[in-house]
Image (cartoon, rainbow, N blue to C red; front, side, top):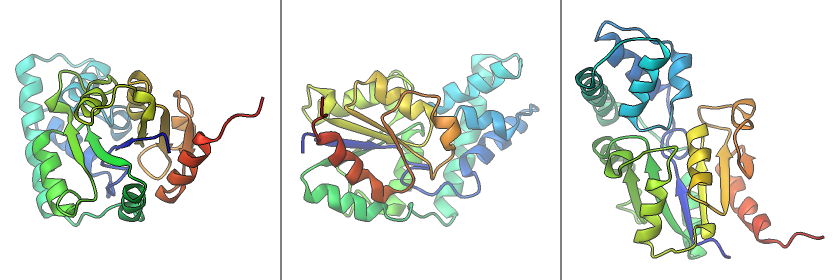
Length: 232
């Protein structure tokens, strides 16, 4: 198989986003600073670097703010979200660990990337045990690069770590528009949207992608089909 690396998003793609965990944390953090945003607005910025997502939300609402305001809201958001992931029942999307194992058997590397901060990511990964159990090879968070999604910085850094010079051998998988935009910006050979996360088919089909899948079980078939020559 020509694909060498699959880059998965976390919340909504490999990890269950129970009862809109992330969206609720956004709304609570912003409300604690005397502002209000609607959950539907939060949905539009899912997947983005969280400090940038807060900025986008306030801009959309026409709310005036300073950099200090953004930092305070972001710090509060991290406190809420990290506390949640430390204590709440969390679980993977059904079939994800089996998919990781199947990819490993084929010699394909697995990495996770996310709009979360590294502190949040480490809590999740520690509780899920994916890295400890060698089900994934690497991970990267949005605050470890200059630009988060929809920019390509995280995927390009992962490509560097795996000594990949041609990003067409990378598959990007995610549940948000920013995931799809990121995959295209990075020049991934296959950009896959998932329909079991935060966004519907109608919402994702507006953004450039190669295929949309309804469960993790479908990914290997999609990758195999992408290997097949096109009949002219």
